[in-house]
Amino acid sequence: MSPSAARTPVIPGFFPDPTVCRVGGDYYLASSSFEYFPGAPVFHSRDLVAWEQVGNILTRRTQFAAGDRSGSGGIFGSTLRHHNGQFWFITTNMSDFGGGHLLFRATDPAGPWSEPVQIAGTLGIDPDIAWDQAGNCYLTWVGFGPGPEASGIVQARLDTAGGHLLEAPRKVWQGTGLAFPEGPHLYQVGDWWYLMLAEGGTERGHAVSISRSTSPAGPFEACPGNPILSHRSLDTPVQNTGHADLVQKPDGTWAAVYLGVRTGGASPGYHVLGRETFLSGVTWQDGWPGFDQAGYQVPASDHSFVEDFAAPELHPRWVSPGDEPAAFTSRPAADGGLELAAGGPDSPRLLATRLRDADWTCRAAFRAVDAGAELVLRIDSRHWYAVRLGQGLVQAVARIGPLTQELATAVPHPGEALQLEISSAPPARAGQPGQNVGPDEVVLGFRQAGHLTELARLDGRYLSTEVAGGFTGRVIGVSALGGPAVLDRFEYLSAAAAPGT
Image (cartoon, rainbow, N blue to C red):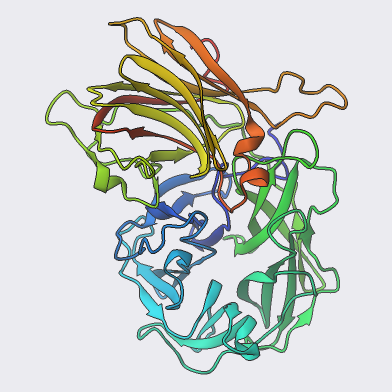
């Protein structure tokens, strides 16, 4: 039997704050992406279990201003909906904060998406849009003021064409009293309007609560069974569950997507892949929804891929933190591969992809390296491990907070093809009682003629959210250092494909 969806994400890796809608028999889902560009990855499914990335919603800088380029800034919680034959996406760019939420529309969720309509007077995060039968659009969000009436969970009717509020924001249901009520979503189900929130913060206390009213504006009564989803204080490797979105299936039944993290290692438990997208069944009793987390099975999937960059466009999996891949990548005139331009010494330009697995191996083969090139595993600009190639040497380098250290140096065999390699491995004392270990160890090295030269083996805790902070997860990618380099081949191998290769 396939693993339960209660323990296995349907979209593994750093894809948090999922928001979902259905058109006919097709489901579409988008997630937060923070400082990474292109932003807001969008997925398609026919069964809610198997998802394929079909693009990114924010593919032009006119849609997603770089702003201060801060880590864990950028694109926060959002809402994806389909109404009157169009897809709608509303979000907040925290790296260019203060002007209000951004509203986009498209006829095809794979894009292209419109330029944004910025909604003045909506300082805050996590916007949601919903329409009543008369066509009124209700914008609900986490208000940051000014003033108490515009702070907390607030709502106003919205002119979607002009991008302006039709009334002053009003406070609606603020949750059950837990910290940080956020992530509102408003739904009409029969004669009731339901307002669902995340509460408790997006860490171990995370939870989902819901209320209902006969009007989209309230007043709302709380569900007596709140919270309707939480893993707080439970003995399960999946923690931080919350920030859910509901969707009705063609047969009239319901499901939900929500975020969670998979923890490992010693107490307090460490997660490294970021907040991932999970799926739950939904059952209704006495007019209230409940989560059936074991209602779906998730078949094992292989996320391996090999890129030789022969396709004319980059796959939508490729992103860059605070930069644009198109600004520093190009196709050489001949011989294939992908040419990378170098950034500055303190701001390398990284072409990266999200890690999808707990056990994995990644390899990169370069040629025409002018000054240097590297394969980098990072969670943010202050927490990363790298294998560097340049001047006839291969080095293992790590940065943890303010400290950067060269760990080892080796001279590869001249004239032999070389791959830089980073992989995960179980901690040496994993499973032994009382051992203080991390979720994994990260192995840095290089491979020639099928032989791996290991340069360093580091504790994976330093590249976890519990150590680094922030809202993202691990990515792995490549940079040119000091001058251009051509990337010939990039391999990402999940555990099923990696051994012995």
